[in-house]
Image (cartoon, rainbow, N blue to C red; front, top):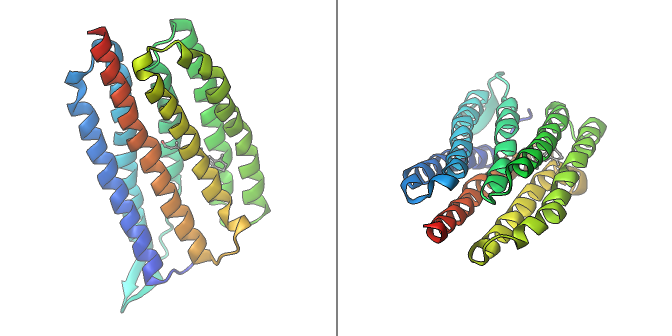
Amino acid sequence: MEALSFGQYDLIYNAFSFGIAAMLAATLFFWLGLSQIAPKYKTAVIITGLVTFIAGYHYLRIFDSWDSAFTVIDGSVELTGVAFNQAYRYVDWLLTVPLLLIELILVMSLTKSETVRKSFALGGAAALMILLGYPGEVSGGIDGTRFLWGALSMIPFLYIVYSLFVGLSDSINSQPAEVRGLINLARWVVVLSWSFYPVVYFAPFVIPMDGGTATVVIEVGYTIADVVAKAFFGVLIFMIAYRKSQISA
Ligand code: RET
């Protein structure tokens, strides 16, 4: 990890703090709202809250690790020698990404066998995507190693995006008219917010930038993507579950 300007250090510090607040507040919203949801959709909403809870925990750890990695002396940012731990982010994704996909599948209330089949296929691909991206992220440089692992990770990523678009479109058409628009929106939010991660990962290859700027783009970029992919997406899942509960009541 290279030295940062105070502005760069501070921006990332505040982004992580925002991440903690957004994830913990979203968790409270989902779990406190459970009483408004019909039993059939409660699991989806419980999982939605688990995702933001797991993320809130990891943002606390990420924030703490960031705080330990630097010290500010007379307005200049110095490295303490304690490494910033990138693994928190990847462990968070490993746990939450498959859950997010399962959440989307559950709220569609497909047949049991279809739910299980889709959950395993998409959840497995998501885990593979994260595992392949990790060695590239921790390699440190903006070089061939980062590029190669990132490119490999793109394979399961494209499979997921393709499956959501083509595979789930039939199921969406058989959903009640009241929620079809919302489920379609949720599908788009998944595809667009998820596409933001590889954009952030590969950005330093496309736009020449120094190490400090690359760190800002990566850390702030992933944090924004996480808040959209988990908290905002979760609100859509909550709304779908709520509306379906009203229909079946
Ligand atoms: C990596 C490595 C480079 C290639 C690709 C990646 C994709 C990451 C994604 C992460 C999604 C995370 C979510 C977290 C919220 O819970 C690993 C950056 C394709 C899509 C949705």
